[in-house]
Image (cartoon, rainbow, N blue to C red; front, side, top):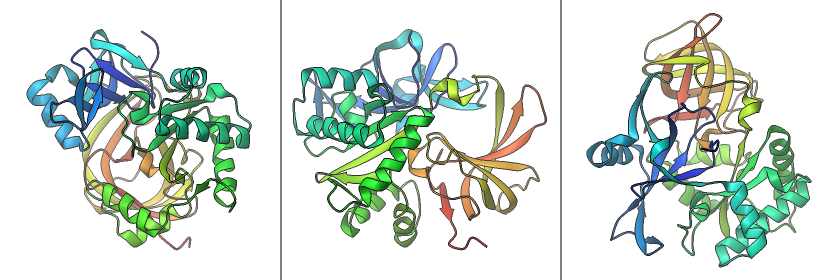
Length: 341
């Protein structure tokens, strides 16, 4: 079985389609979230089968628990019950880079694929990165897109990711570029889509989005660009650290390192943490998230307020410490405060 990680998708033997999360996976399964479910009333179709998209974590969990329990397991490293696909049940692996290579060779079949290919061409030329670092993910990758679907791209590798990130900043500031930032109406639509899981005010959402480059409009279509390190760049293997989830907590802390803020997963080193809700610990070192919406949310030197799951981190060597993981449940958020003082 080939290596799969963030940005990939896998189809299981039951025709369920999952999106892969993170860079570290146990030897017998792939950590992934249910995304598309066969449903005669679904609004998407592939190979003569209708599907519907499953949006919310809680709905995903309930469906799997009731009908497909093989896709839930107690993970000994992450210390919790997680969604995932046993490797023996993987039917098809969808690789974003392979899909882009195929699309370049055969040409686009519809407007969504045409826009996805055109955007990758633009970013490759603007950032001067190899084709091998670029991929197409999301609904297009698994053939579930509709005429109004978003375009989701992934940039693999730290060097390529930072180059594309810089290029996006230049393109979004160029009035002649086909890329532009979302307007107020489009931001309102994005905010409405995020709000069921992430309760930020519209004013805060707009303020934070204004300094990001990973969500934009391209030729009138919503696009999302995810930056992902190669697993070898992460410098960590499954099991090098264990995690013991505690209870949820809300924390105010100062960000001291944001070098991994653009990536998924993202991490923010923090100091001077004050616990506003939940159990207080003295050794909170980082705020982390496996969700792309929390990338670039806070900058170094800023104070942040975050709500998430407090975890005890137990390395194989060295002292234990704590981290806060944002985005694992509805109601989590990460908010940069305006003042840097």
